[in-house]
Amino acid sequence: MSDVIQAIADEVEHLADPRQHSEPRWYWDVQRHRKPLEPHRTTVPGLVEQLRQLAQPGASVEAGSNGYNESAPAAVDAVSLLGSIEFGSYRRLTDAIERGARVERRRGAEACLRALVGIAGQFPYRRDRVNPYRCQLCVAAGRRGDEIYAPCRACEPTVQLELLRELRSWRYQAEIIAGWRSPPMLLPAPCPLTDCGAKGSLLAYADPDNPQARCTSCGAQWAQVPEEGVGSIAVLAKHVDAYAGQSQESRAKARTEAVEERRRRDGEKPRDTQGVQVAG
Ligand SMILES: [Zn+2]
Ligand SMILES: [Zn+2]
Image (tube, rainbow, N blue to C red; front, side, top):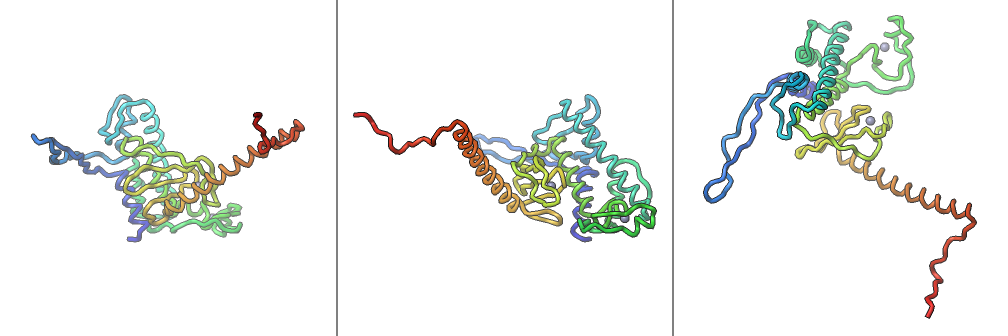
């Protein structure tokens, strides 16, 4: 199994399959030493099922350490994300079947996600932005076929890297909503990818083992340990620092210019702070 297919399978496992969760426990002996107890082991449903439970009015789910259970915003987020996953996975599977993938139609997010793992090897690896061209398959199918991506989205709605990014994005969001992960922090720089450059879209996720960041606009990702389709967070951090420094410099420059402009308008000479005499 290639790295990207393995990564797709891992993400689907998080979303669709129940898992063992072990909560560490401690006690204090007579000398007040902290001693470990057997961890409290529970089986938690897959993230999609957790969302489903949160989406039911008044229902609660066994949530993570900083779990909040029945708050209204969590429920609204859960309904919305669940809808995206249900619709998105069904759409991708149906599109693939219509383009000849040999797999049965499924209903329900978990079934669609597992079916997508089974056929992921048949999708092209990635999509590249290229010079405008005419897609001959589109022309043959009666479409205009003017494209800037190869393969084009009409002919290949799903490529492996996009599927992986979408699954990761669903998992991050589900983990935040279900209380397993702290909400992300907004990074003060635009997305560094030249294709994207979106502002206010870079989010950093607190994760002690592997700090991660992603762009909510184009789906690009960065991590401490770069993997398939994931950039280095050190490179991203340099970009954010450089941008912050630059914007500080340009703010300072803009301030100076504004002051000078004002002085010119007011006909005021720059103040001479050197020759001040102290009366004696
Ligand atoms: Zn095409
Ligand atoms: Zn971006």
